[in-house]
Image (cartoon, rainbow, N blue to C red; front, side):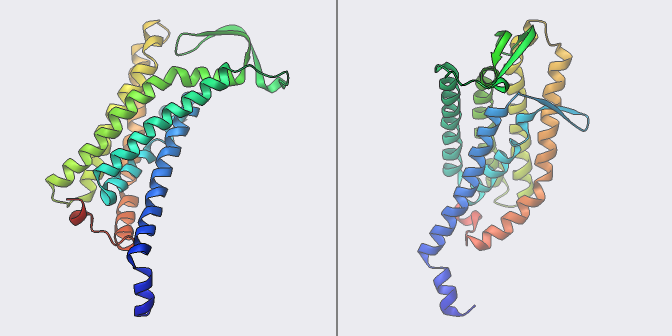
Length: 257
């Protein structure tokens, strides 16, 4: 690359645009993962090896990787801003689902949009479904039963993650990247797993439909999955860190001490 080409690529405007594009990618991935968590949530439970998990957990670890990258390259203020926007996205998704469930349906109702239950079905929020029920209402009922848990756990875990990330960064003076990446995520994931399962299935447990053993197993499996993913993302975090440091021409230690 010639000097003129180098200067053109690294002008202040070009660097600003590059940094903002990368920020949008991380913020968009974060918000999309949050939206998926709310919509698919507890609609299905799956096995990954010996672990029993709600399907909504699958995209959630990406949120912590994204906030770690944003914290590292753009600072704590921007990371907290994205987390706050995510809270409003949670509310927007819930509002759209609520409107969809409460607005009157048209006469166009294909058979696959309605399910028939021979026996009453107890939803996590206490509602009992029986007879013919719209598929959309079932999805909304699953979301409604977990949205409070999702929002409480989200706020506690994400702000905890950002705070701890910068705590470890200050303590180690910007060294030991693996420590702030893993220590912040693993603690915040414990907060998240405990809060979301306890709130979502608390009424089910109190009603005697879920044993304490099953409740603790869900918390354990939820947390173990998230910890395993957090440990696995250390390598991509290191690769992304060293690539983006040069690509964005940002020294995180100097710019965000």
